[in-house]
Image 1: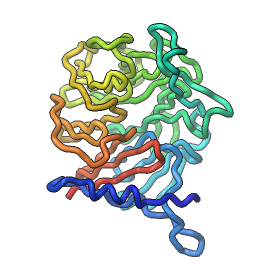
Image 2: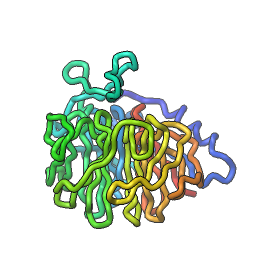
Image 3: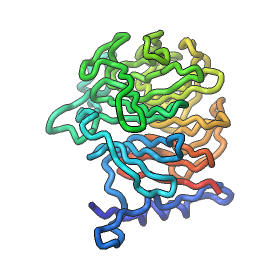
Image 4: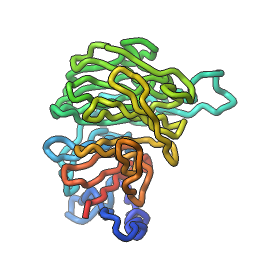
Amino acid sequence: MRVRSMGAILTLTAAIAAGQPYKLVEWPIQARSAAGTPAGPWNFGQVPGVAIHSSGHVLVLHRGAQPVLEFDASGKFLRAWGEGMFSEGKVVRIAPGDRVAGGSGYSVVHGPAGCHNCGVHSIRVDSQGSVWVVDAGAHAVHKLNQQGKVLMQLGNRGVSGLGPRNFNLPTDVGFAANGDIYVSDGYANPRVVKFSRDGKFLLEWGTRGNGPGEFQLPHNLVVDAQDRVYVTDRDNQRVQVFDANGKFLKQWPTETGVSTLFITRDQKIWAGGVLRDLEGKVLGKLPETGGHGTAVSDGGDVYLAQLTGIVQKFVKQ
């Protein structure tokens, strides 16, 4: 296990402004050697996502061996699973001069240039306790039980496309109150796709561009209590809001391209490390405003997944 210094992370606590109700804590608990001595911080691969199960356990999705790691809230390791389930395909950016006119700015590479479980992109837990993992490199979205058994698959694994049964590098998944499923699709397809709770295709919306209802990169999405769908259009540095049928309602700009969204039970949205109301008004910030995945506990503690290979936990004071 590689020892990763926590010094730079812990110094972020000094950046919390006066009155900021969050404190950065070291998380998870360090692993221990066979002799019982501390073995250093966890050696995660890139961490694209984090989720909290109804049990209170924290699921860390990382691009390495055993891609789903489960911890309790204190950071004690419980178990790992998911090896062999997800693709090695790595999403890569296409240089502007190499892009097809009007086409995507992203592609996928497989084989030696990829990485271990590198296709994993997002993890969510629905209201029924099922775990959802978006495998961008495999063009698939998996619904899993708590033991990691596949209950449903959206998308034709390993086959890209632009149709009701195919994705092209999907990025995230969200859920309506009635169980309807929304997928942001994604790096290569500029659209959102809606399914019924049993996986039946219902509708889709979005084309490439920067106008209302258009996307350059629909990277994340969440659904509020009124069934409005909030989509991060990362490369256009904005969040767009739609009704349940894909009708454009409004949009609000973001300071940078946002790579993670999470909606809280009291109907506020964490866009990276920035807390906003449903109109996009900034309500607060963490000292870390980035992140690639977010989860918030019932008590209000915030977990940020970082592609640098760490999970940051901010405890609500």
